[in-house]
Image 1 (tube, one colour):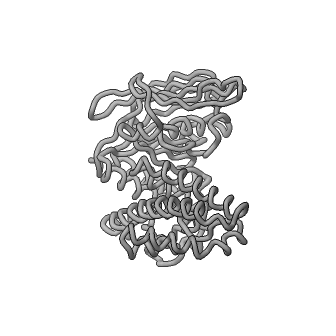
Image 2 (cartoon, rainbow, N blue to C red):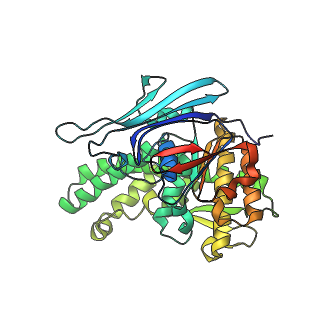
Image 3 (tube, helix red, strand yellow):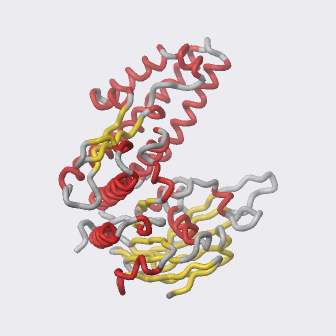
Length: 381
């Protein structure tokens, strides 16, 4: 039986002028959809299309205009979902640009307009793992912050809007520091906004990290081929948020910003805040920093962390998430691959996976829809 709530299943995916697909009308509905094909055939394009039903720019973090097949910049993606509360249709895409070159994204739910992709969260939650994340633990802190914000977004659909607003406020502060360092009134106003948004972002991150830590501790299995992770936030503002009430943390952060104006102006950026935090990860069973583990251990640790996050999404939202795994099974030995399939089956959500070799998914049997992907087309194997 699934560990959490059953999630909705995508029973139809329709694409129009998206990436390599002029048109596609794909009917499915199995618990696992396995996409097989040569490199460059368009497997990841299908996962990217599904990832657009969350706030943000999808699993590749590409500009939306770059997803359009033609130069007119327009595309459409829609899905039909079947879940505990019936069937729903979700759609998103870009309309053709205006003569001035401006484009706009549209979002629809059951034919009616939606204000933003955040509205899709009522019907669908999505988590994913792609090869780009393989270097997460050894890469720069910015990569881990983006990874963490994606974890937060899966349980808090408004988090992306707060992060974007904070980025805009920080850019405004940096410009004022550079252009008119003496404008105290304007800087006070901007820093008040930065402090409010910064504490809200840091608090949302901390809540997700703490919830995930508790879940990992409660469900850890030292014999699992996917080791459990110890995670924590590291940063000056994170320490304030952990030790003070929100209003007091805002006051202290505003004071730090005011005291740091000269230093930040010299640096050309704001040095303290959520934009300087880091997600610290340790290999739980070995109690070593994740970046010092072997490449195979890091891969297994990352998979374990993403699977734990999927369980957290299910527990917090009541919706087992749609799980997108790009070229994950190919890099696992048979024992870990079997354990992955077993864990995914218990999650209760639909899984879409890619791989070049159909043999990777043979042990799934009738539980999976095995689909052959060729440039611009998908056919059942």
